[in-house]
Image (tube, rainbow, N blue to C red):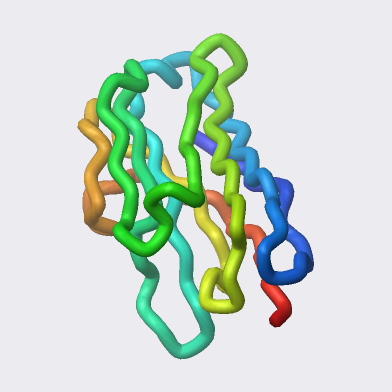
Length: 124
């Protein structure tokens, strides 16, 4: 069973930065595309960013382009999300997800494993 554990969430003022990390327990991490999603209260889970297994293919949701950066380290089984210039509308629970043999999909249903989520709160 693949386990994902997120860390790095917290409370930050608008304009600030946070770095989320996701540690993945598997011997085949390089076979997984990885994604970050978020869910605000009363809203559906939405795509934020994704990276292919090799790191060659990266996608971002339009509202985070230029502010967020997704990276992965296949030697350490980790995927990170650097979030800069944070806005109050970025407030949500952020989830890390793994898609076996995937390409970096934007669809929730394509992902096989999920972390428990980490809260990000941006104050105005």
